[in-house]
Length: 581
Image 1 (cartoon, rainbow, N blue to C red):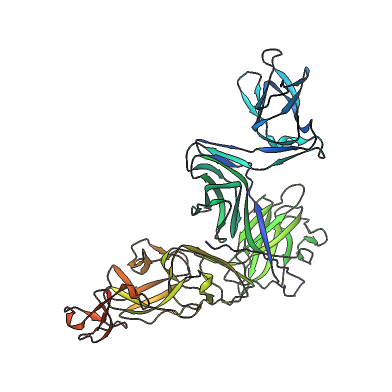
Image 2 (tube, rainbow, N blue to C red):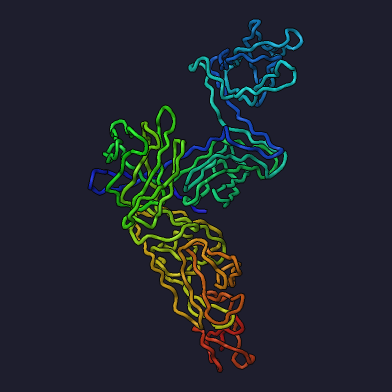
């Protein structure tokens, strides 16, 4: 799978009546919260080990409780045996865990149940008796009833003296006694070109990306850092991490990156109604509801826009509206939301002239950023602009073997794969075989349907700048009622049309669909259910026979014309290439 580094910075200088200038490049990164909003499979544990690093003995970390916790027992666990001291401040004074000078343990337990009964615990101190790293894996109380367990979040501890001890979260430990089990992170809503999963150390694991609407993407890496290329036209709604076998993986982080352009918030915006904009503080202020400001003078194409607030009092519901060229009315981009970061989908086939922000309530909102996605063209998008966008991101997974392909701009063949081969349609024999000619050049033409042959599966995930895009498709000439046609629309109905599948050309059944940036065949009359693929460069599929040994049968030349008496040359006989001497 190809990897693409994406950096994209765009400043839009806006004044009333002026055109916004677009330059490059920037990427927006979303850190997935791996500490909350998750569910676990059984049997799986998911714990966040924190590392306390002590540079001077008898220093460490503390945790305070308000109100105090009534408990009979305190348990602190480490990833391995270490010399530690745990102290608890209780209603009856200070209690520390007994230890022997020469001994170490991985589990430290302070038990009041037999001597003092339940105690109100106000604070806990954990100290390293020696210097070094101490990795905490768990901490909890046994409450006054003697059985109920109450976890102590490891994130609630802080260092007593930062010069003598530090406390950091290194990773989350995902452990299962069965393979293909793990943890699923939810409440994600982000459009991204790439997901990066980082582990503490190399392991075999599965990354399962869930998109809004039910579609998904899987990857099976064996590494400490895996990059999964994504379709930015789809919104990521969940991410599942699984072990491929029983054991433990140490998850450090999950990040989502998206290609964007950045509006310079230090520029003027046009106010309407009682709205105003302070470009120094980047604050929108309104005196009544449904007022706001506008970004005018835009001249760009984009698949989406993201707005992020940094208002200290919490997010203010902001509605975004877009005005396209040659479209009379503004269109709402997003519905009301109280999230700090909101993404709205735009029509990438239309030129954007204006973006409006309306505040739902009488208030003010301070902006962190306003960013526009690149024009995203993927298997799941429909239509292309007749334009030259500043940025175009093309995403399309391809399988090993034969693929149909049609792209709306010139593309170097090496952008697909180093060993990719492309073929154009030459002829159809009228019964069972379609013949193709290998492309000798290094560039695929815009709007031309091709067959691609790949030695292994790959994903085209590439950012293009200033690429001229055309919606025009140049279909092949017909041969024996068969035509090869390109497609730029997702979910195209393929019933009775022909597509490439399982290294053959097959007729589509009811309900079959074709994704965008692929190609298909139409046969106006006749046509078998299944056709063979023949090319002019695969001599290994050709048999050599003498003309005198050729049995009576139907024979066609490479242009699909029936030949009654073949002479020397290359022919299609019974769906196979034959060289007649």
